[in-house]
Image (cartoon, rainbow, N blue to C red; front, side, top):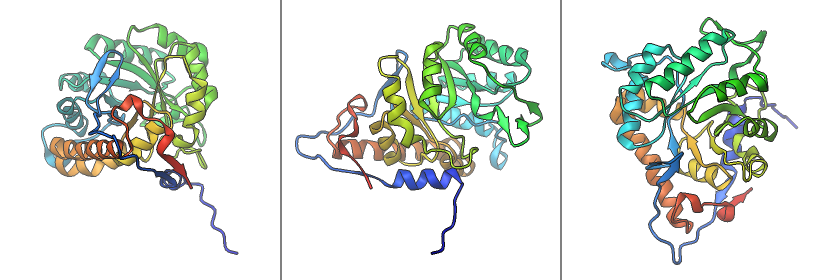
Length: 298
């Protein structure tokens, strides 16, 4: 029998997500409300933008892609995330008015980490965090756009958490072990992610979600999931398996490149509309009500 091994975590993730099916509960159901809350703020849907980095001006438009999707996030009242950038670009993001979380890379230059986090807080960020996905590379420690990364100990992460009054986010959690460590040092949100398959054979985020949710019970830590999120059905499955929200990623890029603010807005509204439809068809009136009652795994 022929057998082809597939180490690509994105393919593994897509297959797992598509193996999750949904049962209907229509009687006594109502049109669902997709609003959700994070740290005292109400947002119109539990769908977040990705923490993209270094997007240029598409098709010669005035704003960079980073600014365009931030404007869309502002207009749609959803929580916005951005990734690796210098402070001047983050200042431009803040000026869009979007409630934005800045995710800083684990630079070997710790002074740069602290400077970017401090700048984000002073500039009006909604939250700050660190992307631990990029600590390691094939040749040891990772190098991202010429910047060397560094190992992050729990003590180092805790020092960053304690340096700010803002909610702190750790991106790149893919085990209950790391999730519990984050909770122990006061992290307010984790993003369950394999960063578009950096690790061969990485477990699909949705597969490990229930274990992480159980490990964090009663700890007050919000859980966001990403990787392969492209539809309202994907968001619904993430919520049913234990996430508080989901972040789209590369699925948003074609709409951003081709349509800018309007393209991203239309894409995200489509995700929201499908989420509302599925919630209504499964008897969940509110995002906070969603559990795994209507989930079936092949």
